[in-house]
Image (spheres, rainbow, N blue to C red):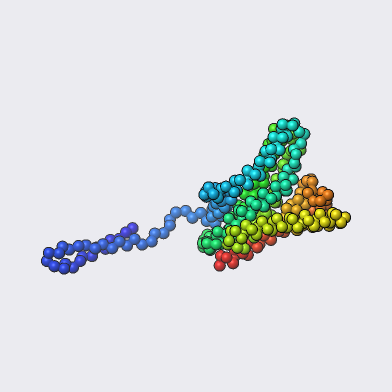
Length: 308
């Protein structure tokens, strides 16, 4: 509340009137409303980051690329469904577990565009310490960002599978087979989303420059896949087929391919369809989980330093 202090001025002459000067002491007011705490701040950061991954709440320019990539992911699935319905096919042209592998270039481009958007601006404008002032902590920030990008990726990769599933049911394909395949596809894209989100955020968090982050993510995802595919092709030509599954451990997309071919009944995209056995598949699963845990640990370490 303002406090008024009247002060009488000294007249400068007989004809000069006396004026009153008032000083308003505004002061500072404390916040008396509800304090929602860390959980609310974490949920808000997750929600804002997830919306930002598709440009929601941002400019029209920011919506173009993520929405375009989402459409590109779903259109082939819609075409496959239309073909299956028109030709009265007994099965879909592509398995649910194979769809993300075939569309991995689009997924990599989405990660490359949205991972830097999620973290690079905070680093560039040095706003990360403001998050950690209170009540949010380093773990809350990392979990919210990681979960948001993984959720956005899951939406991107699961939506076309849903289109395939609904279309298969409309085409009156076998309900049990389609439901089993759809469930297997969801498990595969969930692992892919966690792995790609972690790798994308770790790479993007290295530099505050968004352009450098985009180039680095594309380079890591595409070069690793190209190198592994080349080595596997060479091994097949030389008759060293036993080496092919082990080489697949060195690329994110071939890791997911190996896990689903070993445990989810998917056909492998490796040369000669020589996927890992169940024993080798255990190594693949451990490698995927280890990479996800390593990405989370590296992000925690990075933001502990930034928040100091």
